[in-house]
Length: 477
Image 1: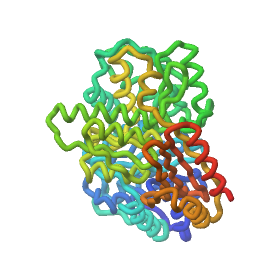
Image 2: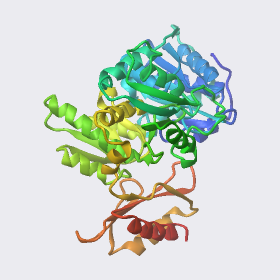
Image 3: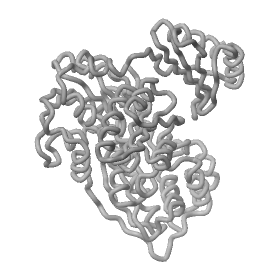
């Protein structure tokens, strides 16, 4: 046995194993003993004994120790660990795809410093959710915590591997930025892993040719205590420094990465946020055009049901098929594989690429945006406006003790005025004549908290505000 048993520890796993990953407060159910058990369970679940497992980690204080603990558990069950060290989450996906090996990435993404977690991938960067293996990993780990981890007759080994240069070169091979006009870009890494990957991909740190980009860095120092602001650009307060810097430097645009740098948010030359839906529409057009030029006739693009209506409209106008899905990165990775979609976009700034093993990569989305923007002379605000014709509420959270009762109030209030579907939460679409303003709303429960998340879109701001307020009144009644 590599560990002594930890009686009663199974319950801690139920609290930290979420729908798509492991996430919790360090020392409160998430410690190195638990990580070691999860590693052993992961190796068994994905059949990695005798094969390789990629292990990477972000800049949080607890991450190196957790990565080492994971390596111990994996080696004990017979896996050879490729330890790639400090990396972004999409860099771990790259290693999983390049080496066709399952992977574990230690990060809590955009969560505060007290948190950490694990994002798992099967070989080839395929996602793992509760329904596709994560529940089995949780249950196996519970057994190991209660009984100890039995070692195999041929334990594995650990090899250190630096994949940053290969990762950067691969992204450069997918999007050519060498011929764009010179651009000044402010990049806010939020003290997260973008501070490592941006200089390698967009700069010269990986030994690649110089691009026509002047990078103005904000918070590139890797610091898991996040001394400047939380590394969560989805919250408007965390974009303020970037917005000010873009205007102050007279930059063409700004980019903000979250803590593990797999999501990228954009602001224009005025410091105004560009919606992830607009970015998704722009990237979708580029990817559709690219594969059509290569001879593909039947092209599909995935979008989750909360993206703006402009996304499926853009996909259809380009002659491709929009595929509407639920929210969630592991689910969308699965749909990418099932459909062969060339690209996928979410409202939360996750962007998925067939040429990146169907995984999400915010850096790659940013490169596509730079390529499109840098090939024309208009300011980014003008380009983005073409793909932002409708009014969006953004996601509004409400604490709700009785979610079914809130759904009942909504259905009763809108019966006869709207159509309903339950693909993901409750989507309410207004039944209107062609001459009337369109509107839709989605109300989804949080996976982890007693919250309802409301998103509303309409053809104009007044209509959006009217329905937003009506839905909020019903939700919070």
